[in-house]
Amino acid sequence: MAGHSKWANIKHKKAATDSKRAKIFTKITKELVIAARQGGGKPEDNPSLRLILQKARAANMPNKNIERAIGRGTGEIEGGELLELLYEGYAPNGVGMVIEVVTDNKNRAVAELRHTLNKYGGSMAEGGAVMWQFTRKGMVLVPQEQVADEDEFFLVAADAGAEDIEFSDPVEVICALDDFQAVQEALSDAGYNFEEANLIYDANNQMDLEVKEAMQVLKLVEQLEELDDVQNVHTALHVTDDVADAMMAED
Image 1 (tube, one colour):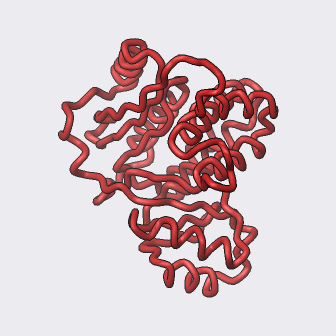
Image 2: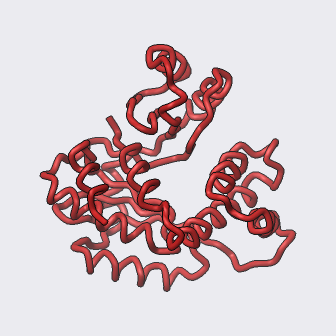
Image 3: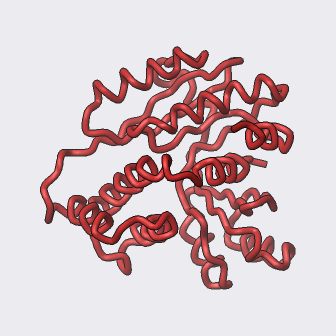
């Protein structure tokens, strides 16, 4: 099992404070800008934008912020250029990491990234040193309360091309890139609403660590995702239930 949903659930619960709202809005703004830049500003013609709009509204992001971000993406509103960058690194205990960055200042982003990695026991890696451990895939998260019949859900997702389904909260569906659109359409047609639908870097082989060691990794991931320029962090760590419970028990 991929285990992304466990980390998504940890992040969701830990982000439920006002102090996190500004950072959430910053990340969603960047996602809106990029989606609008790549696929246009009309949600009906841009599935990626449509999903990010759902995320923005779930986070209670003001409409004016949403409209400004979309306008910036389509070029109707001026704004600094956003760069999409990818970095590789190691967390404590040799766990490989892929870090997605969106920034208007590459030098600042790299400096903050390097500082945080060094502070929490990680390190930067040369290009290609870690990437071979991951495969680009599609991920769909569905709220657990929507899945009344797991067998039915499994059949719908599997028939559309899902490779891996984890019935946690939220329910996680992993699929190959070529099947990503088909899986989304099949689940949507069956009446399921998504909590998230994203492209991810899925570890080919996950590492199992003791709870204390795994928490060192997740603490670093948490600090990296606090950085405004970091959009997503993918690791080769297997997040077990014990690890998830330990993270949530922390203040």
